[in-house]
Length: 493
Ligand SMILES: [Zn+2]
Image (tube, rainbow, N blue to C red; front, top):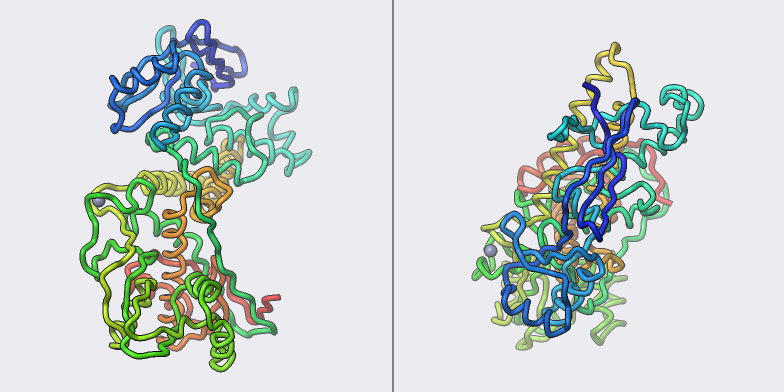
């Protein structure tokens, strides 16, 4: 029996139903489902109290119930749901995401556009995403996919890419944001929605990222070590278990400086034992902030020149006065007995008990990437497998997932995002700074010269950088960076 692809989804408010249109080469089937849109709220809300508050605002046409054991607000009207979400935001500081009824329906069923279905009288079963060839008709009719590919491969690939993004983000092709930042926002909307997590509703502090300037001139035998997959995997619970739900949790507050769940964004109070103490911070961001907000700028500038430093040193610090400095710096100064430990720290930590939903979603992405890589292998090793629509669809999906997952960590530190939250962004960024700093130290200890590093890559001189990257990951218990390039001659600008 031929399968059908889900072609379009429409919610009809008056009838409280969703109509799904399924299509294949021969026929189109419309199926109706009773459905009432909803959004999740967290367990802190008491149904009775919330009912009272909403009635007092004269809100009708809603009710409170559960979906998958999570508390929800239901209403047949999208506008009423939006209004209730805004009321909740104003009374509680928590802004829960309201998605279009069609998207909520798809998330609820775990279906998406262009998924493949077996449809009987009473039963509809999703069987994956094998797309029937004629789906190409969506854009160009009367031309087969393979013909289109021959005529214009680039354009054909672009069309397939739209199918891929629509399928992954559960939005119609017409609603796909042009920029990848917008696509990441839709992805985050879906995961924050499904995990009943509110977006940030406070006014955020500004966030600065420091930049390293590339050196002049040509350098011989340079390996480029790519850290972008490290940034992604460092957020999972194998390493830092970072997410808005696990940052500074109430159950795992650290008590000692060497507790493993302390994040590098923690600021530790120290008191110098000598006057005029200077040190070089592990965090460029901290150095820059210290320099711009403290007196003696000229003094630091001359020290920077005198010692050929890349960044401003931190200092001069006076004895008997307390300072808050990054935890990695504090540990070094305590080891060298130049300071004593104060009491008033500003710590950040991650939860050791529950996995963050960000970590769960990253793992899902990683396993989907591995699945697609395996699936695509058969086309490359077996020449009898014709490169059909599915091959192109899956290749494009793989590229899209890699892009989304590599851009996710830096998107969480982008103040323009709706999902930007200062403490989380600061922690994500401080992890990156700390790992890069540790890598530079590790390289230098093992006789490698780091010529330059930016936010994604480190450029190391020498031939054995693969071994260096492996050893670093094993010794430091961190994700393994990748060697992305080796060049006998490199110019940075
Ligand atoms: Zn905890």
